[in-house]
Image (cartoon, rainbow, N blue to C red):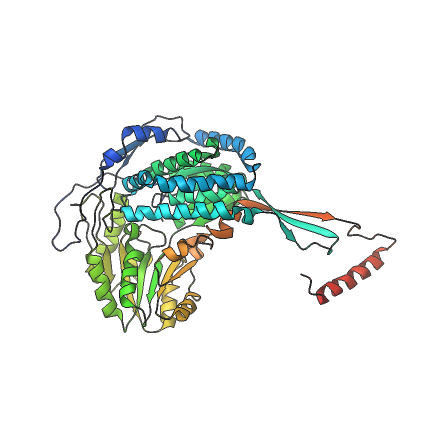
Length: 547
């Protein structure tokens, strides 16, 4: 994942298009300057909890390298103020019936779909991704809003549990909000990973102090405005921005629970800081995800799926595929299809639909991608498609790249590239493929392609990843918002979506009411007789299959 302390750096100068490169997408749509005027920046920036200079930090538009916005920076004192405001607003919000809170999410759902073009412009302007990939964020957030808007009451309602003594003990499990959630979200999916993760926290009765990456703060601020329009109390969602090593620890220091998406390195630090305070944390971290193409796969479908899996959002997706494991018997045919589709992808930066892939977000991402490819080629890897930057299109464009002949000593083999680069490996048996897929410390996402769905599910059950897609890239699991999504191993702790995605923001409380008799010697029983009666009772309860 991204390092949340990094901001975009100065762009390179555009050059000329290389021969035989990916085609450029047709132009169209508004310019970044027209889509994100200073008046919009000023309006959104007013939602930041910050007392510093209003234009202290400059962000750049990845598509063009031009200045996008000047934003204030929050200090550690500002973070304290944000928590004070959030704590003041939270009790009244938590006191509302769940259905009242859920109604805000459902209104937000409708507003988001109605005004999606506004946020699509912002997401593209801040990240450089293609519009279709920006639309994936709208889809994901709308699905989460609908799901928790409809299902929150069921997740959070009091649940009857087995009491100590049947009939005599009435036990109920209740769910109480944590309080104020410290939420640190990255730049790569600024809508989905800011508001999408905050929605279950809100409907569970919490307030949120959110630190989005500075590069993509405008998208989070826009989402906050829309949620307030839908009925969320304004103080309930506080947004602070600033250097990750300064503001991030301050957010963790005051939180009742921490939700973090980012790099494994930073995630370890967040987990240690939260553990030192005895507060919980959910962490969605890095990945080196694998796609397995079995011998009986539909190769055309698998090739099309691999394009989505590897190059959506220019590969800057935590669940993106960076390793392709292909059965040796079909490898040549598959790679011919996959490489042809990859070379045909249209690259572009217009704020309109039409481009198949957009830009990387910053010079840092471009440098990592370039280094991984160049080092691999120098060490003997073969480029089947792509392999070069495209400064003719914009400062951070890099062609979608397929590498063959990658060996373990190459950085691209084990390190997360987080760019549009995938390495190909051949296998002979399913056991070999499963072992290779499980060979990294990460365990976030994987993909299996086969015509035999039973076989696909069997292989999926052997993979050590939090999500496994059979005959899809990543959208099948991520879009199943009623089911949990998260990582194993170095890919994180906890889950978003489903029951776990909302219950993580709550404390379980058991309330037990005792009737008629105490759980102690009574009615003239001495200690020994009480023990004998209880022993007999336990045997009877087991025989009657009580739980």
